[in-house]
Length: 179
Image 1 (tube, rainbow, N blue to C red):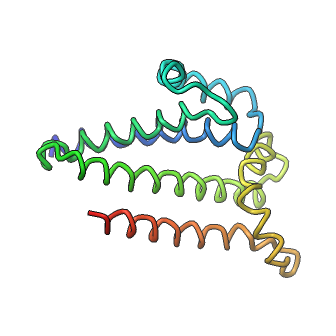
Image 2 (image 1 turned 120 degrees about the vertical axis):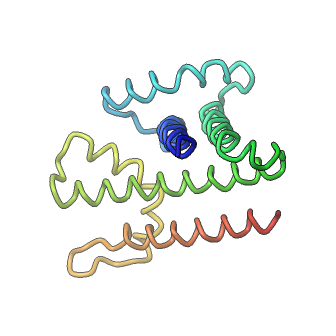
């Protein structure tokens, strides 16, 4: 029981830290400036790892240090979860870390889509709404070209959620079939 509680805490902390690292990377990819409160939160929570990683992996067009930081956090959480049970089998740990890393990426996209949908229903003029819309725009723009409005309702976020769920299953299956 104690092990499951510790793993719950490790997983929660790892999810938040890796999610922030992935958000930092995605904000730079889509070139969106976050609201000040979000920016402070993201940078203060991720600078401790991103800044040292930039010495190893300098930036360029993208903040690769943030992406690497997210992967390292996922890797450490997998080591904590299954390291001893697997006998620290590097291949198994790396494979599970890759699976979880891609799952968290897809789940992060799903979360921003759901947040945007909630904003559109509750308060489309909320201060964070334009920021979330900007994060989702690269995902939704190609779908909006294909999926017409139905009765004035944009169904592209629903299609994106379905496609992301399919992507999670395909990527997970492909990575696990390597083992």
